[in-house]
Amino acid sequence: MPHKISILSIVPYRILPATSGGHLGIVDMHHHIGKLCNDNMAGTADNDDESKYSFTIHRIFPPKASRYLPLAKLKELKQLAKQTNAQYIYCDHPYMAPTAISLSKSLHIPWFMRSHNIESDRFRTMGKLWWRIMHWYEQYAMRKADGVFLITPEDKEWALSNYKLNERKCHIIPYGTNLSAPPTNKASARKEFAQETGTDASIPWLYFLGALNYQPNVEAVNYILEEIVPRLNAKGFAYKIFIAGKGLSDELQQKIATLPQVQYMGFIPVLDTFLNACDIMLNPVMTGGGIKTKAVEALGYNKVVVSSTAGAAGLMPEVCGNNLLVTPDYDWDAFTDKIIQAASIQPVIPQSFYDTYNWDKIAAKVLTIMQATKV
Image (spheres, helix red, strand yellow):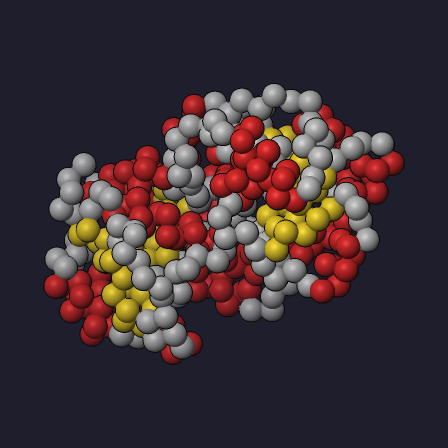
């Protein structure tokens, strides 16, 4: 893979520090792309320092809503593209499509859009009234792009069916993991975390992790507390559930405080010890669209993931071995039974998982697609 390819990436939001799975997915993708080429990112002025990453942020956009106006900062972007000899344009999400289209036409280089999920359908499932407007706009952006990177096979099929795209320009580029093999330090991590939290290390440790001010995740926490915990208790199952992430409401924190089997951890800035120590990821997510990034992360750590059907959307079961257990949506009896089953499983994530989801392999695939695309 040549190392002198130059890309202009348009990412008009603050991604550093990465405080959500979506932000981390952008940072990781560009870090691994930047190891293979020159990735110059047009970003916002409020980003933190990026010196430990392989991409360069050019702080072109102000941290204001005006940055989303069509053709915002077009002159500066064109100058940056020429200065860096950009050969391709990479745009996260559809929001800057008019700007990317204009740049592509004036510079005679192809542009690519990475769809983190089908935004219009995500808004529809969340009850947002403007989802129809997004449907039209997202379709427009995808049709105009020279290539569309979709995170899941389901998203690709949805886009082909509903937006009538050319299949040749639709590519599955999943959310990834930095791991290339299962970690080997679970015992030491478990001992450390047991001492830190005072938790019995002999019982299964379950967890849910995510941005807890995001409605689909709020709903998932409620399902855990109201549907799953009572059923586990009724079966006499010994366990501990950790809820981790920023933004949990005071109401849910108070509810958790009444449940001795559940502990709220707040935001955990460094997750390695936590993920190594735990056993089972709970994924009772029903809405939101796209792949559940924390499920990919959990599988990379060789955890067993117990998921609703909706929560498992986008995952490729054929590369997950026995680590992915899926139940029908809202069937909480089945979900509870799968948790108990998971506690007896010796997880063995296959190498094919890392061949599919490792970030280095994903980044190499992206550049291969770009190089094969002509305007």
